Structures are given as C-alpha cells and as structure tokens.
Amino acid sequence: MDKFAALRAFVEVAESGGFSSAARRMELATSSVVRTVDALEESLGAVLLNRTTRRVTLSDAGIAYYEKAKKLLEDLADADSLVSDRGEEPSGPLRVSVPVAYGTRCIAPHIGAFLSQYPKLDLDMRLTDDLVDLVRERIDVAIRLGEASPTADVVARNMGEFRRYVVASHEYLARCGTPLSPDELSNHRCVRFSYGGDQQFWSFSGSGETTQVVVTGQMKSNNSEVLRAAVLDGAGIALLPDWLIEADIQSGNLRRLFEDYEVAPNNARSVISALYLPNQRGSKRVGAFVELVSSLVSRPM
View 1 (cartoon, rainbow, N blue to C red):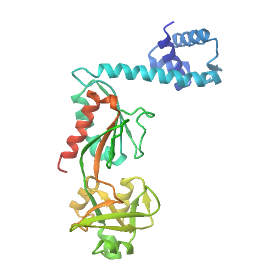
View 2: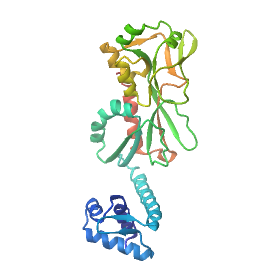
View 3: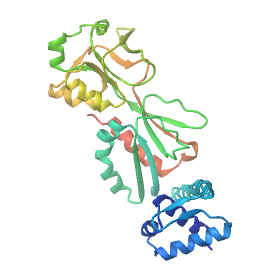
View 4: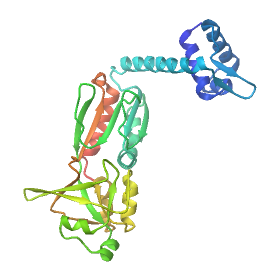
C-alpha cells in the first residue's frame, strides 16, 4: 500500500464528506478510493470513517488521525515547494494574506498580469483585516498596513509609506460646519476604524509640534470601505488612507481637511510591510509577490 496515497484519499474523503465526491476531486474511480481507505483502516486496525448509505463521517479515531494526516501532507507539500522554489522561475503554491480593501483595490487589478508573468505559480490570496498567524494559518507572506517589527520568528520588510487624510463630505460640512483646527474635532462626529480600546486619538504633526486629539462619534467599523461609504453619505469626519480616497478627493466628493498636517491614528506609522518566515528567505515565490506589492506602492496614484 502506498501510505501517502492512502493518506491523501482518507483526507479527501473526510473533507468532501463522501467517497464519490473525493473520487471526483482526485480524478479516480470511486471503487479505487474505497479500496485505498479500506486498506488504510485494515493496516491500522481501526475504523476511521463511519459509513451509512447517506453519509460518511469521521469516527473518534478518525478525527485524531485526520488532524495528523492533514498536517503531514501539508508539511510534505511545503517541503516539495521549498525545494522546487529555488529554481530559476517562481513556481508552486503561494499563500498570501492581504487587508480586504487594499487587496481589492490596489492588488487585485494587477493579479492577472502577475500570474501571466509567472505561469507556474498557484496563488491563494486571502483577504482579511485580522493579524494572521503565519505559522498556524500556513501563510507564505502577509501584507500589513502599519509598521511591523521584525523578530527572530518573522521577517518584516518595509515596502514604502502611504498617507492618511482627514476627510468629510461637503454635505456634512455644510450641515455641521467645517473644523478649522484639529482641536475642533471634539465638536464633530468622527467615523473611526475599530481597533484597540474604546478611546481613540488622532495624532497631528506640523510646524515641529505633535498634537493628539481624542475623537468620538456614532460609528466605527473594522472595514475601511464601510467607513468610506459612510463618510461619502455624510455620516461624519474620517481618517482614511490616500489609496482609498484619492479619487474621491479629486472628484470633489470628499474634502480634505487640515492639509498642513501629517495625521495618523494613535501613534501608528503609515507603512506598508511584508511579513514572512525566516525559512522563506530566498523564496522566489515570496520574492515575486513582495516585488509586485512594492512596485505598486511606489507608483503614483
């Protein structure tokens, strides 16, 4: 019995919930998959799958075995890709994590050309604003908006900076007035990004001084596209990245406030960083994606 083939068949059946669906995914005959899993169970002397005429589920032994088998297969795939990735051309699976709005607006429009340039890559681009665990979620490279400090476990590469602007719609300013200085924000509704504690402040730097202004309002969200839509609809004043709202400012749909200041939420830096594990140094797959994002950061909007 080919043990790795048996493990793959068992994992496919467990994940697809049946022998027929697993066989289709593996492009094999259903009878062949059944025989392979039967042989695996016989060799182990344990029942891994509970089978009825309507469904297939994992037994208690199967649940424990599935976790180990899946990790073993993933480790083998990683080992294969690590070796094959040292050739002349980037190839193999590439799992990346990028922020939702930034990935959708700034990276996704260039993915077609990227994959055409590297036809041997198998890209899995996951969109999330959460700080992912590279090891646990098996991410090759994560793009983060904000400064990330390198550690012994993670390599952090600064790819460039963006700017954040304080903006509001003309409708909101006509209704509620236009603040002339940052400290007047305390009299306005501010639409805020959800992070940290309940109290948030925006840091304004200009003329050699830094001022911190506590901001409050009726709404906050963990998605910058939602904040943009709310501000366009007159919900309040927001602090948003240039790559998200530059076109809105140019079109006149949003007005930029406090243009003489550099602004940041709390004390965050407006940096775009790429994070990857130390064993990915020299990876052509990771390097190709990092260079793509780096080139986009340096382009004028």
